[in-house]
Picture 1 (spheres, rainbow, N blue to C red):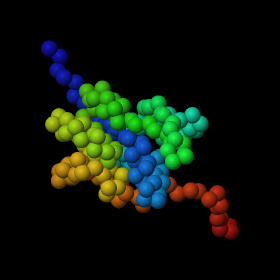
Picture 2: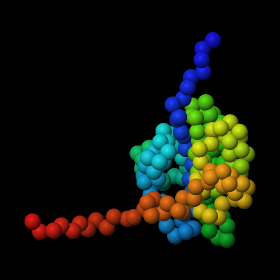
Picture 3: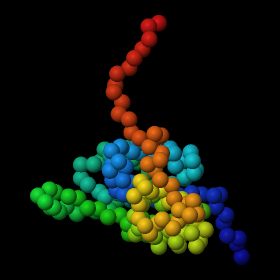
Length: 180
């Protein structure tokens, strides 16, 4: 009988892009996705970062940028609808995030879930029961009450507290050079 293959502390991240993006945007800042991916690698040695995102035509350059930043994109078809005379786009990725976390569970030792959405409560409980949860990263202090009980085990990390190192800063294109 072959021994079970030992994983070398492989950590994967599963990211609800809409929850993360809207969470930081509500605080009037913009996440630098490249810096965020680098943070996940440097701080937690995240080998694979799955980014669950609604697919919208015309956003191809964004998707290319995210892939070049070393995210693995998992697309969800989106629906367009009107609310108060404005076109809204909905692409709920919760089911895809849970499904992929479970599909990949034999390929990682620990998972990082990035979302403040209470819909992931049962997934987080399962990962804890299997000793497979590393962290739950929530965008702000305003995350689901269903997730708050995990904070007592120091499993919750607020991304807003990392704003200084993860905020996107637009380059001005102006370079100042001292005289030789």
